[in-house]
Image (cartoon, rainbow, N blue to C red):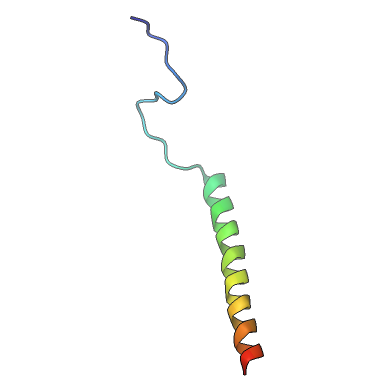
Length: 47
């Protein structure tokens, strides 16, 4: 019928951009730091 393409209809699959990967690594690092520091805090307070 019509040859109009919707924004999500790309035939090629693009991987995540470098910026998105960098943001996820940064957020994951902060989350890991908070998790580890919380566990260490619990262990220090318990002993």
